[in-house]
Length: 128
Image 1 (cartoon, one colour):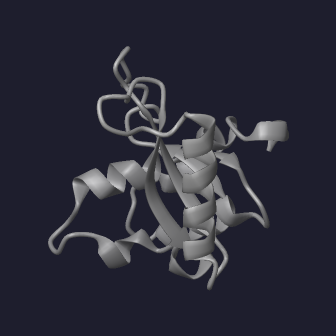
Image 2 (cartoon, one colour):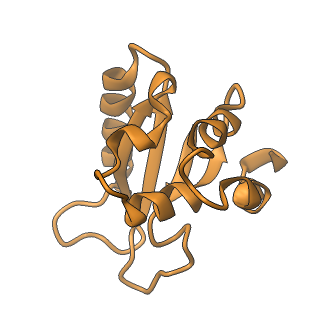
């Protein structure tokens, strides 16, 4: 799965904003995926680095399909930023219904998660 996160998924961008991505890989493949995606984005000249930020991709967060429950990394006593981040994640590529699994794994601690499901799915390439 590849999803847009942070300011773009929350409709809070300006001309200096980058495009933050959340990428989910199969278990045992996270480092391979991370290296390949970083290399490809760097070679294409679309990866954020130094002062080159605006409109470029920031490879913000990687996870595997066996680590989709974000409550495991939430701050003790509540983590409103992470909760909002999870709630507004907008998938653009979704293989094997990973986004549905992500929603199911996080519904127990993120209020409004199911209500945002269809809103967030509308960005899927190929119509979702």
